[in-house]
Image 1 (cartoon, rainbow, N blue to C red):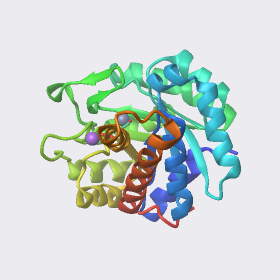
Image 2 (cartoon, rainbow, N blue to C red):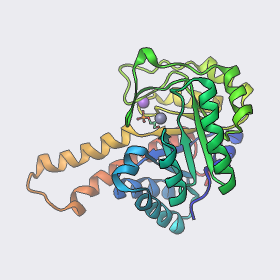
Image 3 (cartoon, rainbow, N blue to C red):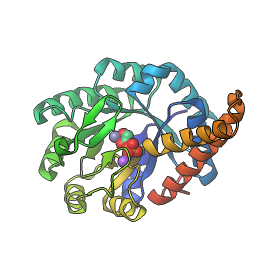
Image 4 (tube, rainbow, N blue to C red):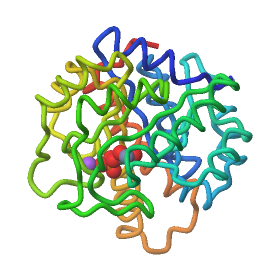
Length: 283
Ligand code: 13P
Ligand code: ZN
Ligand code: NA
């Protein structure tokens, strides 16, 4: 069965590694990251955004993830990423998701607390994880668009107060990363991560994982980031592999053929990220 991501992330934080969390949009992408986890004996978080829930259906996604988890030798959680809509969030819980992110980071602090608290109460009752965001992660994820000048770093004291007020088990503080591929390098505030981690014992979540140089990923993890989200990079390698097939053979029309290199590419990229965050062998 699918497991809650709370114990997976607590173990990661306690032992100085992070769990890879991958946004998947098709069955092949889902299978690719599951194979990556199994081959490397890594714990795994499958994720879908609200856009993907609307595209595929929470029940279809949960059924595929559950099938993977039932067959798997490694622990697998299913997480709803960046949800701003309470009804979608409840539908996903009902469908079998074992973790949800309530993203009320665009609202003032008190409203973020209010919305997060409400979700934490429900999630605790059914034994699943909750993630919330403080500050604003820049870039584009689904319909959430945050321009660079609007991105806002999380304040360490506010992080501590937020945890106290909401009881949320995992926190994503904005610390300078962004969704999508960086122009140049991310401007990560490592000192801020350290100060947040001193005040918050809960697992921290690193958003905007695509494009962060390896050495910087490792510093983030060493400071207390226990989950790294990857969306854009696996979408790119998946799509590029399909484009290559059609460039070489424009008449190809068998998804069972053109999806093979795409799946391989996602699997290889996922293993590479798992190695970077140190979760290989931790299942
Ligand atoms: P990237 O698209 O940069 O990998 O960010 C992923 C993410 O944070 C999903 O929530
Ligand atoms: Zn994100
Ligand atoms: Na990124």
